[in-house]
Length: 314
Image 1: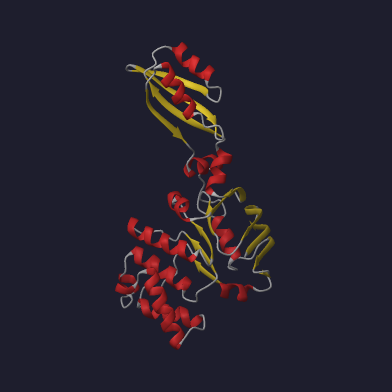
Image 2 (image 1 turned 90 degrees about the vertical axis):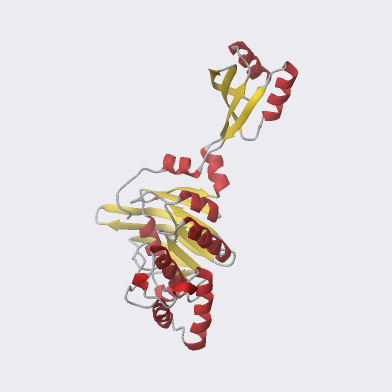
């Protein structure tokens, strides 16, 4: 488990992180979102022990990062946004070097190498020089290095940067499988990827947590009503008002004439879906519904509503 309590980080007069709080249990994949400069990377670096907090507490499995940084770092696999690779090294030798630092040698290293080469799809380039590998493969090498000691916790800062769509799907499936047993905390600017991968989303803005919940919870809190666009053969405004009066769950937002009918924009409470009532009413009146399309919030809508674009990430 990761527990963050009143965590803050100041750079002189600039407050990069402002007394934030959250907990993440084992077996959960959490997406950490924020605009550039929001404090994402600073928070991840404090959790991993690379930065000393100005105030507050970070606990990993009930160990305080201030007192047990080395022990905590043994339990964490960390992939920074700027992937720290040595381009002149062979992939195999680099992974052997990282494993040796972790105390993994001999048969244990061979078993670990086989596992991560298979998981990260490195078989075809394991004997190539890192500088000769594509950006996508270099990202995979960094991910493999963060996983070679089979950590209980993975902290990934922009793990799919530079990957093509097929590689992104592969890494997504890897992260989802790892999340069944491990705690995974990942940041990404690819909102669709976060939405497809994680169990929970935390959004940070100007150093403060502004949202925390599952995708469904964020959607529900962001947009209490559902918008519905309906095209009908109704030609008169009074017919539209009559329908609205007869189906009290709906509210007419606007209506626009179209050839041979109207396009009507409605809204209704999420828990009071009136579409069946509307359809039955239209059948009884002999009206034709050409289309009926509900519109729900997207993660991009929530993100734009809660954040603003800043400068470089703090």
